[in-house]
Every structure is written in structure tokens, then in C-alpha cells.
Length: 125
Image (tube, rainbow, N blue to C red; front, side, top):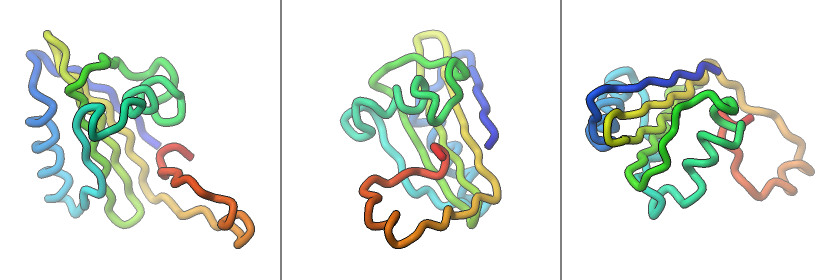
């Protein structure tokens, strides 16, 4: 898994960044599987999950501002996955990217499958 953290100065809107990255990903054969904007669409804990939990970005890795303008994009191409967390502060925009290449599905037994009720995205394994 590759983790990337970018700062863009001056600030660019998360919507403009999302449109740019979705176009670049699509041009390279990726399909956007999930996209959300703000806590009302992403859920109030999405930002903390990505930036602070240590399950997506390593603890202390990404520069995060917690705003209502966050956008999250998840895209997939065969065995490759990309997660983008896009946000805007007053003086800069923040981009966090997690990239997984050549991911292989985890094989689980029928007993484990029965006990799994929650979807675990590949970037949190």
C-alpha cells in the first residue's frame, strides 16, 4: 500500500479536485465505485476513520483539517484500488491518497463468511 499526502496552495475546492482525479482515473481504466461529500453523505466519522484511526492513513501521517467540505472518492481497476480524501482549508487544499496495487481477495471459509456482517474495504486490511 502506498500513502501519499499533498498540500495545494492556493486552496482549490474539493469538488474541482474530485472532478480532476475522477477524470484522470477514468482515463486510466478506473471505475469510481464510491464518492461522497461532507458528513451528510460520507457519515460523520468518515474523516476520522481515514485520518485518525490508523486503519487507513498511518497514525499521524496525513495533514487533515476536519471540515464539512471533505470529499472521498474510491476507485477500482481490476486488482488496483485508490482512495482519495480531499479537503480545503482557508489557505490550502489537502489531498490524501491510499493506493493498493495487485490486491488479492482474502479467502475465507463458509463459517467465517456467515459471521461477517460488516464490509471491510481492502485499504483497511
